[in-house]
Image (cartoon, rainbow, N blue to C red; front, top):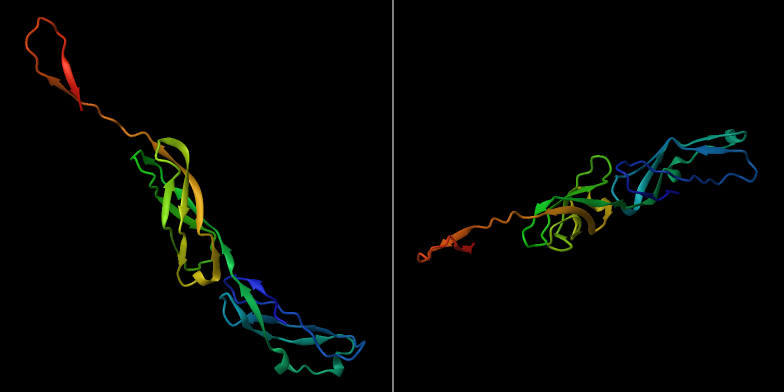
Length: 186
């Protein structure tokens, strides 16, 4: 009987062996290897068993029928892919728009491409350690079907104060014996 496993980028499988020995006979049954047909997640996947052997005091009374015991099925469940984000600090621009880079805990060298729909600061105001929400996370690529993925995450980043440059334009006046001037700010 094949045992279910969570996706791992190998075809390694584990099985439980059963047999039809006669009552009270002393036998040990083992196998050299078991492998799924491929590494991908799915249900009812073929598992091939190889290297069947028997031992024990009564082993000499039996011959192994390998045709009945070399194939079974089992499930490979999707692994949890946790996608995180690192937000990039920005200068105040009157919007909540944020930019992030995504990271994940993929197994081995699996081929995955990460993307997100939106990333936004909680508000537009300058400050440090501001929450950034990331939504619409998607995963594509050759190995994407082997993972269950979170569709949102959060992180923090800073919004620095924008530099405000104030200019002044002098306003002409008629001579009045004072040095008082009037300016228009821009």
